[in-house]
Image 1: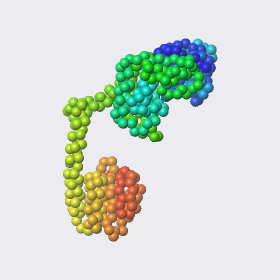
Image 2: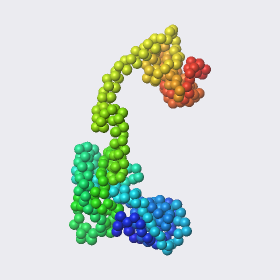
Image 3: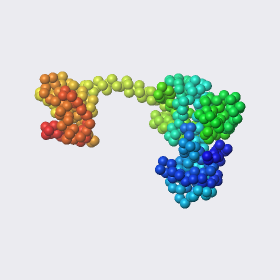
Image 4: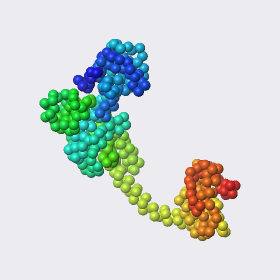
Length: 386
């Protein structure tokens, strides 16, 4: 078993060790050491990166028998017994420590303020999530949990990790049961949260910076909570602030007034929606009446699918088949609709057009619509040539 130096000092960034073995992990070269400060992926926390004897360590994993393997592109000329120096990619490790500690803290706060026990957690490259066993947590309770977690960060509580003796362990009020029966390591955030855990953690809560819940969703009868902490939280909050400031500049208002500005735009759009619909209907009536004579109408018009459907409906009501298109630079929108008593098969005609010009759509004998891949400037010719 490799000695786990990160249990002694999670802040150690370099160390020396002896190569115990050269092996492979999932078809990649891997190095086993007699001792290591590299943390292997476990408990939702990703494995460390860094260098060993100048070789890039691209992952750290633990095998089923407890062996820690340092995955490298190639072991080069290394041999068992060689003494090597290892260096942790500190920025990555530092962030992982903050994230893992933040997960403990937020899980404790969710239990206390929202009665939501943690079932599992994942601290990934792109998202930090906690799955809690309660469904549909009110926003007020989530906010209360977040506030509690951040108040504990502000209090700068000490964080301790140790292997208590059995007698002491029996007296500790752990938030969850240990997953192992021996060598149980406990991480305590002051007196607020005590949890069994083998991961790396910050030494004081102030090192977490801040915790922010960014999303919640229902997941397998539970609630999945996405959060950010440490440098990741700062980056995400700064990014959202930039978006907000950009919107404020565009609306010529203060950032806090952006919601009101958006509400006004929505109200204006809704108030004009009825007018637009009425005007569209009047335009469809006018265009439908502009086709003199009787019989099918084969025409190309400027507009969109909604306008074409409006025109087609009025033509069909007048007893005329509608074979309409709206060509543009990227293709042709098509609406086909037959009048009562007509023998036109709109679905069959669409299939012929699609077979020749490509596109997406479909329909039935009485109605078909879609978009062809080609711009058909001479629409009547495109139809009559079939």
